[in-house]
Length: 103
Ligand SMILES: [Zn+2]
Image 1 (tube, rainbow, N blue to C red):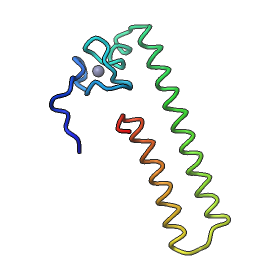
Image 2: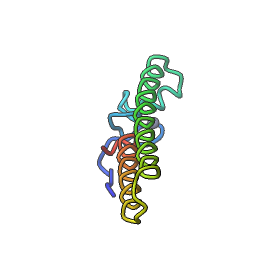
Image 3: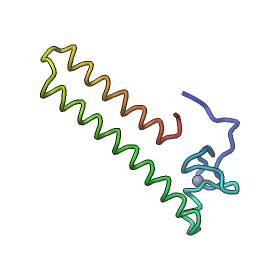
Image 4: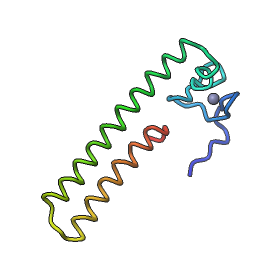
C-alpha cells in the first residue's frame, strides 16, 4: 500500500491531487470544484467520467465475452475455469486501478 504523506492534497476533500478527478485545480481537486458549481470544471469532470465509463464498459464486455466463451466452448476442466476466472479478475483489477489512478 502506497502512502501519500508528502503529496499535495485537495483543500476540501483531502484526496491526493493526481491527474484524474482529483487533479489540482488551484489547491482543490476537479471533483470538489465541480461540486461547488464551477461550470468549466464540471464539463471537464463529465469528460473524465465519460472516458472512465467507456473504459470500464470495454473491459466488462471483454470479460463477459471471455467467460461466455469458456462456458460455451471451453473444456470442463477446473484448470480451464480457473484460468478464465484469473484472466477476468486481472482485467477487472487493471480497470479498477486505472479509474482509481493507480495505473
Ligand atoms: Zn477534492
